[in-house]
Image (spheres, rainbow, N blue to C red):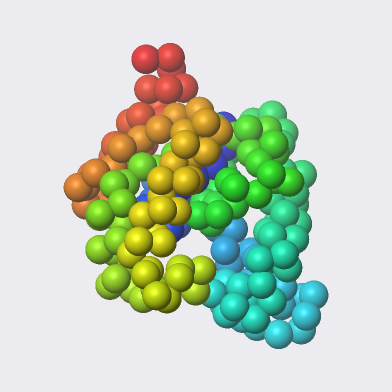
Amino acid sequence: MNIVLIGMKHCGKSTLGAALAERWGCAFYDVDPLIEAVHACEKNEVLSVRELFIRYGDEHFRRVEGHVVCDLYLKLDRPGSRSVVALGGRTALNDAVCKLLNAIGLVVYLRVPPEELWTRIERSGLPPFLDATDPKGHFFALYRNREPRYKRIADLVINLNGMDPDQALDCLARKIEEHQHGR
């Protein structure tokens, strides 16, 4: 079974997704680097997701993101497929691709409280989509806005509050296995 990880920026989708795929010996797909690769092929320029969003805006970003998710759907929607996919924080908000997520696999929302996420964001630098006049307030508003959507499309919600990466990985693997076995 494929696993699709969703959640806010810095909740651990990429880190835990890569570790889970390694643990299970399966493929790992991180949507952000795939978006960068598709953009590089289309525009013949290498940009990070952050730079791409700043330079080309939301519409271009969503189009490329949709292309990437559609490609993953075509690649992974088959019996016996076992992969882990880490979506970007906004991908689950893209209505054009949201319907494909359940067809790709089990959608898992990695829930981390907004205060903990904000601490992680401050350590790594503010993302370009936050309002520079009140980035913290804007982030908390985004969290309140996005969380109901994440919960609605998720097959499984896993609370990772206060866990280090090893604890979070063990929790994630255990909860997915319990879900698969109906416990």
